[in-house]
Length: 426
Image (tube, rainbow, N blue to C red):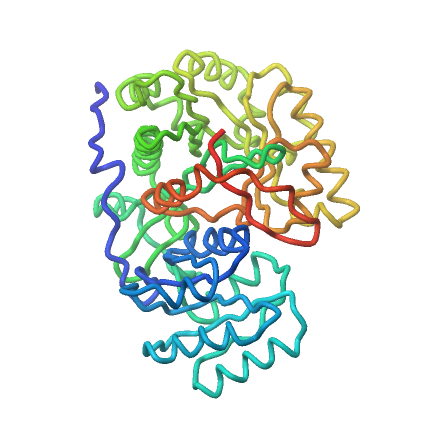
């Protein structure tokens, strides 16, 4: 059967109505802090969880703003003088604010306690003080406590992929990929999500197990088309990123990848191409097939990357001759590599192997600044994880880039902190 060009309404359907109990859209948070890196760091995490943010550089700029919608959460920095923060709390109280306030500071506890008590006297919901520097997990804990953002669906929820595709519940969300040395945005990876009308935003664990072959193939095609279209949308705002998707090898051999790319890719010069992630486990036993796919796809500026690199260590020598562009370190190696004496040498070995194979090394699952700095010292090329941003809808990702593309790269983060990198196009 000849390939039929997929309609964009099928590849990137409009966001489903996820106003059900397991997900909330339209939540808003204010971030009041004079440090741009802190504002951007918190914004990345919140926006990745479906929470819109409005940033203010200080208390006066917040208090002078008029006509802004009421937030459900306010991150308020406390400087040496407590009065400015107290004045901001008074302004919130007068506006009828009913949300929660998260104080944050690197100042002494006496100043923070003064502000916290002042807020409680106004009957404002004051959260426990957050001392700087703090990790991504601290912000995630706040969202969980307040039940803001997309949340997590119960583990027993299962959704039929065929139904999700037919009902246009499937979306593709994008997570930033960061050049660890230059501190610049260099790409984004697409992840499938089901926006269920009752259960909210669901991850693949709820809809991929047990999926039939036809549905899996349809999902792969939509992922490919959606990533190409997203690259085109980004190019329209002057951002050229290499997009990445995950597609099983058995789907790659059945899809007319070249025809799909020709039909949907951006036609502008300088298109950085597309990366397709395949797991090492799928590749090691199909070396000839992988080699054929690499050569075939290169003609269309489509390249393969190995996911979960390092799991099948005994088979790595088989991969040496294959022209993969990226090798993604298995998450279990990356987590804790900044302090774990076992993980660190494993990461270094796998990074060196990737470079020896002529590929870039990608560290995934990064959530701590200490792990990031360790990977930088080992020569890892690209980082990806909640530290830099969670997967988010395309519209939110583009909106975030519009805010960040002109920001100068920040200095490397301290090993004990988790400041957000300044997003800048490569």
